[in-house]
Image 1: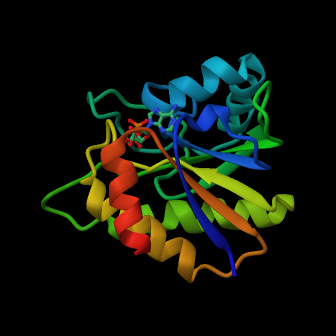
Image 2: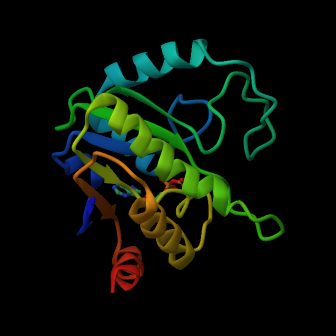
Amino acid sequence: MTAIELVRGDITRQSVDAIVNAANSSLLGGGGVDGAIHRRGGPAILEECRKLRAALPHSRLRSSGGTPIGKGLPTGQAVATTAGELDARWVIHTVGPVYSQSEDRSGLLASCYRESLRVADELGARTIAFPAISTGIYGWPIDDGARIAVETVRATHTSVEEARFVLFDERAYEAFAAQLR
Ligand code: ADP
């Protein structure tokens, strides 16, 4: 069984085997937690992301602004790179779904957590830190995002011993705490 821990703070300050990044499909960095990870982790992460991206098939996806993104990691999938200067061995980049009121994308959000744990298992990671994927710029309501995160990690068979949710603000922390009660 994976122990679930909650921490209020900055995921780039965590000391764990693997830090999960709420990346975008381009893998070339963005705002929010993605920007913070690349800033603190240094250029080695982006360099590996570029190589991984080059090996991906072209996707027909477009960015939220409508620009074609070319090669991209599909939503719900995960890949690993070095953690650069972060106090971790790997960063696992996963692409969360943009929240939609008209379409149920919760399966894709659950997939982010499941696929990240699968990649962590492949790497041999024992401890992992997750942000609240999709609940920032991608607009997912925090209570529902917390429910999917906790339910999925609880239901996933993995060798990861500790999954730590690192919540940036009090509201997100409370949403996760409510799921664990
Ligand atoms: P997404 O595009 O998947 O919504 P964001 O980075 O915008 O990704 O937000 C995901 C969550 O990460 C939000 O709840 C946001 O508050 C949080 N967040 C932003 N920066 C950090 C950080 N340094 N550490 C942990 N969580 C963060």
